[in-house]
Image (cartoon, rainbow, N blue to C red):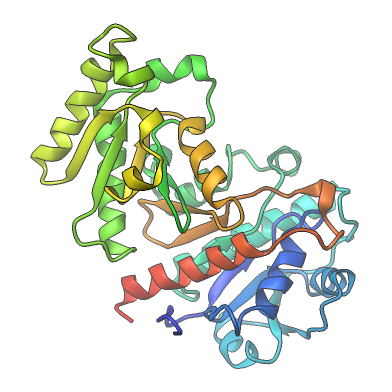
Length: 338
């Protein structure tokens, strides 16, 4: 059954042209009928997409558009692209020219969604170190999009979502040794509440259930294995409950992710990066979607990187890109009441 989608086509930024983003955008369009994807257009380079499609053995047309509203009519017969100009296309060999295209595409796609000309933003994978060479001064695309939307970086909450599991890490790209000092009851409560609100608004879950992981083994075991669970996490859970949010914890993380446990909650709130990402990548590696919660726009991204090592080899699987486009369309439709 075809799912409701955004009233406007979705904007997909091309990502680094030397990575797998261009070929997976083409592969997603080729699967759009069977996968019931909403109309989308790529912001990037027509020539890069055409070369990526040929290299992957895809026989598709790529049509340039001048404005997002043109995409819907073109989408059934060709992949629409808002062409920002050319770039060298050498899979697996990133360069500054490609990084500049990736940054321009991200900037333009974000602007179009913010202005309501596109229904949601789907970001292709980038190489942050390359982008830094061409003027990108954010830790990643999440922080860039948050800043563009006027949202504080700490209120742009990363959720990884797949068919089996949703997870939110409270701390993300920091050394494990820094995690305890970065955790506070206020931060856990705020980011968890943002996640709960997004599950209602964007995912149609009227009363989301939050399972909050402990930091230490066995959730501290009454202080024998660390004090943070009782002193920091438990007060955050109590505060969430006082706000009417169905939250439980702190729970031992080692028993949270088997099938029976996953059936008891809608999102796992985790204290650090690997506590969240290891289980979802074990369960949903090819279909994981990175969703940014707390923004005035919908933004998703496939939960993988540029994969330079396999770019152009036709071995990159499009499942996560397809899932990111589908999820963006569904979330945008709920926001617009479609």
